[in-house]
Image 1: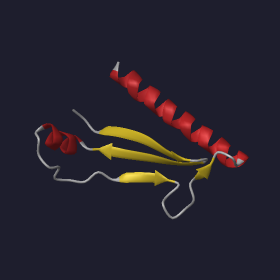
Image 2 (image 1 turned 135 degrees about the vertical axis):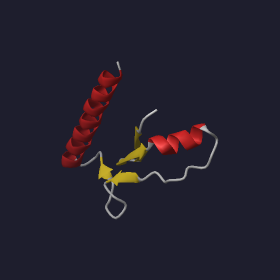
Image 3 (image 1 turned 180 degrees about the horizontal axis):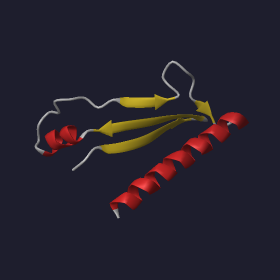
Image 4 (image 1 turned 90 degrees about the horizontal axis):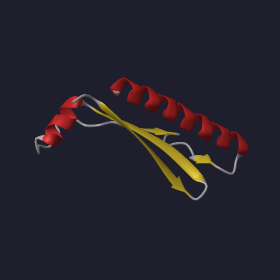
Length: 84
């Protein structure tokens, strides 16, 4: 068992916000042992809560959305390659 990274996206209408969370090995071990985690997991939001989500309708923001999705894909391909 090792640290695990999870990505998420929330889409509301034409608005998109990205999320990333890393669960530590200790956190996952506590869960596997049916215990309450002794440490928290920090969630990162992009854009952050104090900024408006990206809009699919806005051309520049749409380009940013695609770039973020490509970066996540490349990162995940690297992780999967390391596992195999």
